[in-house]
Length: 109
Length: 109
DNA sequence: TTGTATTATCGTAATATTGCGATAAATAAT
DNA sequence: ATTATTTATCGCAATATTACGATAATACAA
Image (cartoon, rainbow over all chains, first blue to last red; front, top):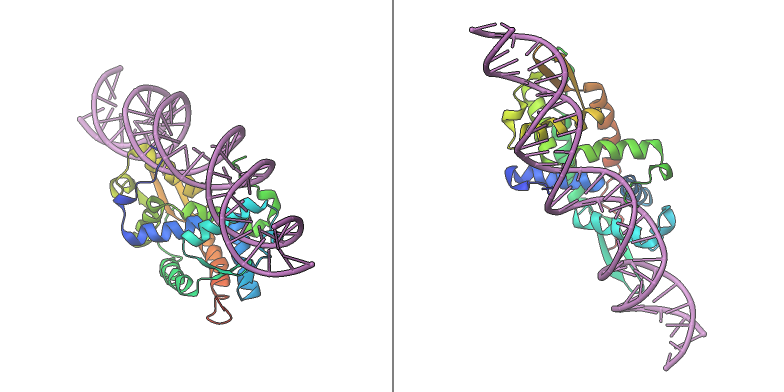
């Protein structure tokens, strides 16, 4: 074994888990924070923002892309990365839906 | 290599990444959703909720506990699990802070 | 054409995760 | 005391992740 058994869960559970998994690494959090901070597409300065080698950064970017959290389009020599706003809106809904259920009461532990 | 280089990131980035990583598995999403649904501490029926063997569920619970997303206290024969409300409140703040920065504009991709 | 810059991919090593059977530990029930 | 019941831990195999050097692929510049 070793592979996650996605077939036993709902599509929503699997999708949310995939996105959160993609965000579950400090380098990828840092990438997202940077993209949100500059608030535009960024072409080429992401490697300089991180304390990692270029292939490693490229790999993290691909994972964020596969999780549909960012978009990346080729523009001439470099690649333009930016937040996938639609997907983040959807993720925001899933998360606030979860978080809204967190109340103070009812725990006897 | 293979281990995440946490020393290169801020404490906040590492903490957020750790919690999101803990949530980055559908079984653990399902556990959290169940705990939020019943809205109280749950003693003993979590294994029945999941399509996994008992040791596997126990392992997932431990990971959620290590990420401080749930609390577990021994009550006699069984163990009482519940949401760690304080920690979720903090996670909620981090996430809404991130999500609030997601706007529609400024992307030319 | 020949370099230069930028990003992606391949290959590989180290480590982590996932899942489960077997077993232990602890309390409850008989 | 003996037998369930419940949860945790150990050990293992399969797979995934993380990181990077080397190298390819592509577009720009000279």
